[in-house]
Image 1: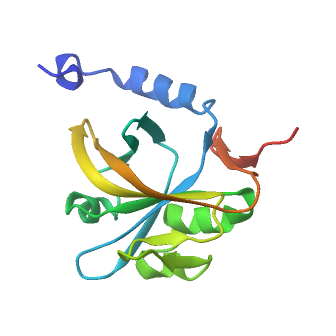
Image 2 (image 1 turned 90 degrees about the horizontal axis):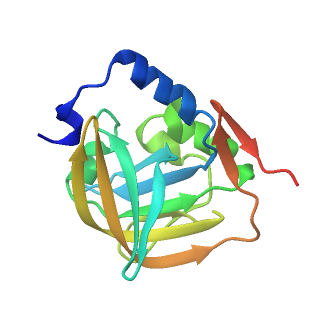
Length: 170
């Protein structure tokens, strides 16, 4: 038995965890990719973390109901665009405010040599080759080997906590 099926948590535990995680402040990113037919896809996310520096790698988690899920399952390479506070509206658009190609109507989007879209004015853009996919519960974990990193100007991260976008203030 896997840990997910070994003991199905009660709805009360799931809700308690959801409430606890509202206090876990996370940087907001946009995961961008291109599918096999050349269509661009983008989604806002906070479930992102480095895996290793040797080899340089990153992971993120995607709900199987997400519109970009099937593009990722198809093996798409991706970019993790780390957003600055100035990207607040773009985060909202890619978080469900817009659909499909309309998510690219705002923002300084470019493409790398392999066609992966990236936000050229992001705090940083981490372009990855998809390496692994691990199904777990309602989500899949995608691991990418870092191929390239580009930096914007300065650090002013867009943060998500307690159900709202915030900025760090000193």
